[in-house]
Length: 396
Image (cartoon, rainbow, N blue to C red; front, side, top):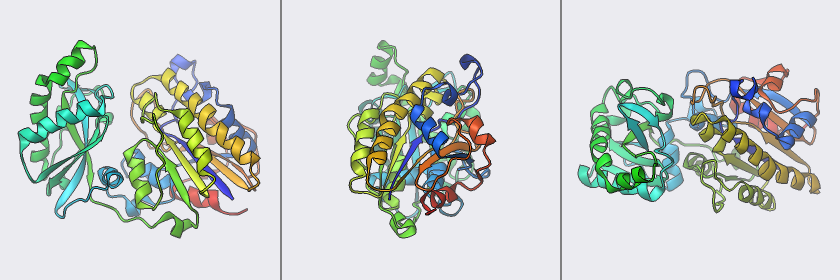
């Protein structure tokens, strides 16, 4: 039996005026995902419990069959796991975004999707200016980096930068026990970065300046049961995002690297699809995560979101379907976002997402496209996202 899961991150949305009242999923040409929904089962699943942070950290744990209420310790530890970072006793690890703050307002959580080399040069300048052995800086990808800080900083209340786009940051600075060191680092970077030569070049090129860091998502390392021991299947993941890489590493999955996979709308969709097809030679299951729809929605760019969905359908879902249908093995395929990211709010929401699955012993009840409306009209609704994996893998 072969299995494939495709996760178009943040794909679920709401009706948009600029799309004549359609959602991006309804407006996109996605014949392969529509085929899965129409020839299999379509329903909805709630991947984020209402009392937990609404992000891919919680949602992806659910999608992969782990109850976030029992195992979640924060986003940054999952990204640290991807890099093989050991968190020293008495310290917490934080996600460190390089961001754009203009006149006190969070304009861009990603500083124009700054190149890794530029972002890291800025963080190195901050590290040198800080010169504190109890604060560790770790290089990530693009705007996404990590910082370890001695507790009680881990007890502070922090806010994701993508949750406050277009809002003043003053009301959302770290607060509570241990927040002083976090605020000091953010404020120090806000003084240092605008004067750095990298920003002079970025401004000359008309790019968003990288004005500050933003610290959030802290925690300590979780312990997760290996997936093969839990479900009896071998699996691998294809993703450009450290968060997903980290979860994979913690559950014993290999991560397949793809040249040109960026975690943005310019990612190598065809390369991911080809790698996914090849992985089925060795693995029982392949999971392909694509960040592009989420990034487009954070930018309130419905056209870019539609483009990303169409690329995922053509270059990833299509080749996987073709391979599975041509195989001598029995098979199943599942497509679903992890959480909604409506273009209207530019942030994640707790609402259920549509899912569609097809393959062996998955009978079609009502033929419908892969849309939020079709999922809502279905009689198949899973209230605890962590139960979907068992449903997907169960025989009959």
